[in-house]
Image 1 (cartoon, rainbow, N blue to C red):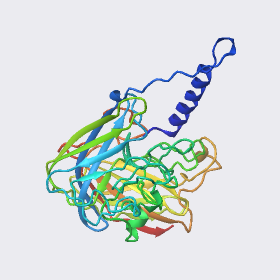
Image 2 (image 1 turned 30 degrees about the vertical axis):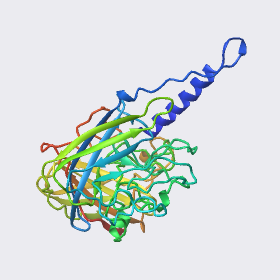
Image 3 (image 1 turned 90 degrees about the vertical axis):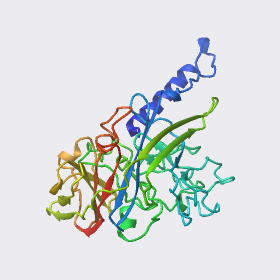
Length: 399
């Protein structure tokens, strides 16, 4: 996904350009020039793998995607994805979809997971699909960040999803990878996706894995970066999976990106045990994880549910018993570099409720993601040609 600073800078430059273009000779205004983006210059990537989901012990499918401009930023900020699986891949009849008030899920009983065309805010013509109108494919993975007609400063991003009244977000059942939901036994077990929960306790890549951003220089609600993985709790079926991403361009022909990935093996990675987290008593602590063989890198995700702050530690490339250190002062503070000075805040405070989970990958998951990776086509598969993950159970505790 585009960084928030880049989005804001792009918006400001666009406004300035429009103002300058509106001023002609002798002070006579004219309509600004408009250039059509070259949609064909963007590149879609798609990978598939198994997903061992530790909370309930089931094995599903992991989808990984990138849709980037040549500069590595997100492609279209409003698009409609659809995943079509091989014969034998079936969305369960119990899959409720994004909109409980718009009839049965059109994907139920089929071999595809689809999204819905955007409609007016009164929901006229709304189609109940698995992904809804708000879900799109961005620089790294799926998310509810589709632009719409609402005036939202800075756009949508992790921590500020597309929850515009009328688009159905609040009735979505997509909270299967919410740490809170799975720790407490809630959520839709059919289609878990990152960032789709009304309760914002998600797998999000924050500090110390990425540069510190909780200093007020980013939008207030910015929670971190997409981890890129999208586990779906449907039994994996070997064969080809096709991702198509439709863009309804204005004043130009629509455009569709298409990529196919093959799930050659349905054998999952070994189970990832729950991490043990020990407080250091001064705002941080150490998570210890016994990483199984076959995992090439592991990330530990920590959510402070009291302050809605997100941390990620890693990647660690070794197996066996490994330690992940959450440093003391990564909490929200004010001013660039504030985490290093007297104004620093504890990462976790006494009495805070927190959640910890480890995720193992057999592909370079962290290296492919923002903010560091600006390649248009980063590597999103491992040596097997798949993108397999193993997710530990979630540990809930009080600091």
